Amino acid sequence: MAITFELKHVCQQTGARYGVLHTPHGDFETPLFMPVGTQATVKTLEPSEIKEVSDGLILGNTYHLWLQPGDEIVKNHGGIRGFMKWDQALLTDSGGFQVFSLSEMRKITEEGVMFRHHLSGEKLFMSPEDSIRIQNNLGADIIMSFDECPPFYAEYEYLKQSVERTIRWAKRGQLAHQLPHVQALFGIVQGGPYKDLRARCVEALTEMDFPGYSIGGLSVGETKTEMYDMLSYLKTIMPKQKPRYLMGVGSPDDLVIGAMEGIDMFDCVLPTRIARHGSAMTSLGKVVIKNKTYESDMSPLDPTCDCKVCKTYTKSYLRHLFKGEEMLGQRLVTYHNLYFLKGLMKQVRQAIQEDRLGDFKHTFFQAYYQTQTPHLKKE
Image (cartoon, rainbow, N blue to C red; front, side, top):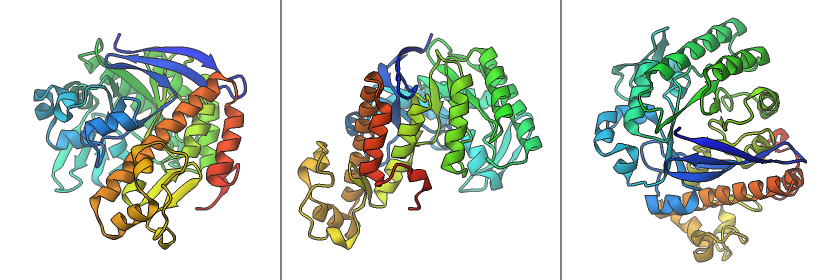
């Protein structure tokens, strides 16, 4: 089997799960955060740096690599791993999220999705079988079923039809999967805000016995209260001995609360995207380094952080880089943000093992957000 999952401890205080995910390219303690390498690169960082700021499991994007340079070219390099010179573990999404994000440029049928290229306007078609074939070529350890990610607030009848289509597509993808011995195919739970549709999806996918399950269709415009409520519900009905992956979620509050709701794996572009615009995650909250208040600040970005950025540079220098539009600033804050989340997840895992994740949440939220309910606080 391509992967196995050991559930080793459940936090007595919160029900959060500590486990180990075994893959062909490494074993990973969970819960963990996975940096996103959309186009076979975590933006601004080289592979040696990615190793320093991750636990060794990163993402690639099926849709974007299919378009550029093409999955056959990536395959000829030995998959993403050979293409980008990454020797650790990989996960690829299915292209299904682009069904949501490119909603103005696509048409969904039972056979698959007709896209228009997001840059050229060229017509493109992807079926569940195409998605799996492309992911087989890309060579990740963990791959995703092709699904429809509908808007969270879509009409019930539309979502009902969408869930049934996602279930059928999951089965088609499972039948098309050529490399189940080296690539683990996850099913994706959809259903918007409706618990009966989520339950229907979980039941059908569980019958297919996937090696892991992803939760899709969250963090797509709903409130955090709605997301947390759905996670709390799914925690009670998803298979307990299989890994659970919450797609597209990566703010510190969501990682801690997601872990409390039984999530094992997370990914998001948030830490790298905000870094490129000058926002840093620190133990004392978010720092917008471009602000004038840091012009002469001789202190490190985060006084408690031991990453090479914080041990080397001052806030004043980092602000100078951003004001001067020097790319090094983007690289350094990207490195720091991912290092920060790696450290946060290590603390979460330790708190779970010591049955005190609820206490950790209280202390962390008070320091980072100056509140216990950041989802009710306006940025």
